[in-house]
Length: 473
Ligand code: GLY
Ligand code: MN
Ligand code: MN
Image (cartoon, rainbow, N blue to C red; front, side, top):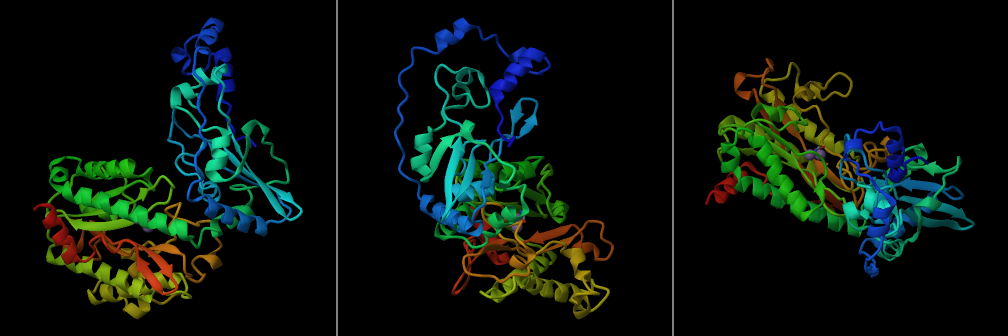
């Protein structure tokens, strides 16, 4: 196992070879300094936290995983810091399988490892964590990545143990063997931890609703700030920034890079460059989701008329996308095939684009599984994906468990049809060109049918116009 980075050793090695680009920044660390700085500190209190609400849910998830792999040692690393440039890293974000099985979210300590050791009747589970450095240790003062003097305190092993309800051990005691199954390396385990998340438990459902509600506030912020956004030459960046402020102040981060795509940029499905102006008369497509401290994320798209009202052609396209979304929602029920959410939305897209004279074939021909697909020129992406700790959750699940599998209660997924008419698409009349619309909602399936977790965010063309009008007083 090489994911553990001993940054102190690395710093020492760099000092010796003088090849490190930070040599100029590193100050001498003579014994006298260490002697002085390591004394004169009060004892650090170690009050033990109450177990977090997610702990019993994570324990049940671990029990399920244990039952699926009798007699095998399972290793689930949290992951390490990833370098952005030179000596700056991206903010640490634990692997989703690790977060799911520990209940540790934004406050997870990098390089930790969850281990299932096989026993006669299951597994003993341990969480290996880098223990706090003592005041005598050089790491405490010197290591700018993990030293507590630099980055703030990390919890003791005892605190982590009571918080998560897990046995903890020193990271330095962790050793891996050739027979271990490691998430991200071994296919069967990687698949299993992904499939384990297909149905959300009660805690997760609560977090998903909270993530959506927090995201709704971010969209309200954007709508309220539209005048300032229009005034700025890079208004798309302002949209991204306004949403980021909400994500950071009420959550951990965004679950993915915000798409703020105004005018023809809306036709680029994952436009995250966000460096364009937001101009009255255009539509702006905003696809954004707050990731909570628990790391559960929403994934919402709304398409707004920047001036406050849709033009007739914008409204026609918008309401067709909504018709496709509503059709998929109406078809959603336990026991249906997941892929039929997409097929249902695609039928509307094919029928309307055929009616408008955009297809070289009839809608039925376009919908033919073998010879069709013509309508996909205007909507190349899928309609639905699972959502949870990852925006594209459960991505390693087998196809027969996902697209070809059944929708069951507890699943959370998106419904997100769109229509995109590229600015240079000669197959459509001029008035369509440069218009891109997507409407994306987050859906929970229950025994009684689907629940739209994002139903409170204005959806219809009329509701969207009223939303903007209201924000302008
Ligand atoms: N935000 C990416 C997606 O909607 O799938
Ligand atoms: Mn999505
Ligand atoms: Mn999205």
